[in-house]
Length: 361
Image 1 (tube, helix red, strand yellow):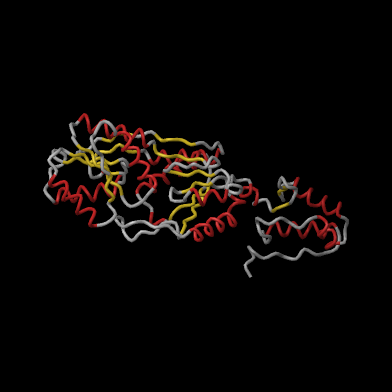
Image 2 (cartoon, one colour):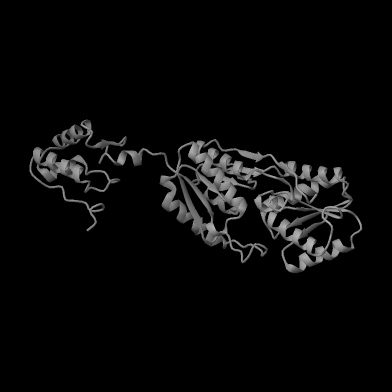
């Protein structure tokens, strides 16, 4: 039997026997550390003494530092105090670790920075149904409504009593989170806007980034602007809509191209080879930007003299290829979300964009 998890019997006769038995437990640490000692009524019955006498023994040992009395009045072995008085961790309910994008890693570095500064632990709860993708260029899928609901129910059932705030990955949909309004406390969504007032969110200032991209296109004499999006993905869709708004009245037409298949990539390249106007491609996702850049270079199209490329994400995936970006500090995004979840001061915060010069636009 593992003594760390065994619960020795507490029986004997008299006050002295109770005191001796408790001291032996304290010295050997044979009582489960995070489990309270029995209540005084039980101890009194077990040792043939009054409840008051049992209480006096517990209180005497507590005053001497041999036991710890918790705020709820229960008594524990003294080692429990450092664990039970430690602030509750911040839970991060995310896609599975091996599916993290570079953006996800940067966000989590920011969460770690903030938790470290505030001396809070992190509880990483990797979801198995939230994100499904065969490869970086393939369409993504999320689990069924029932699968997502069951996952959230299981998470809250197991962890809700021992966490202080939840950080939710951008793939959790509003329609599902709305069902948990009464039980999802101090929850913050990252990298997308939410219409749910009971949630906090740290989203990207897509309108600010769109203005930077369009102004850059005009300053550098691009005559046409094309928006590139991967398969349906809320942050990219929010950015595409913002780019359409910013380009209105500045460019005659701003097509949105969905790069959700090899055929779509091929059609984009064929159209660019025929296009006579100097064109700026604005990609709303970095993997898409890198794939298009490789295709342009392989086709012998001059970048940026004939076709420019700008990303509105700006993670290391793009910057390592010197792709120009009007993107975001995702590490700061994670830190802001963690501070919001820990402090409980929920609000909807838009992270300002950062222009990152590169060789492609």
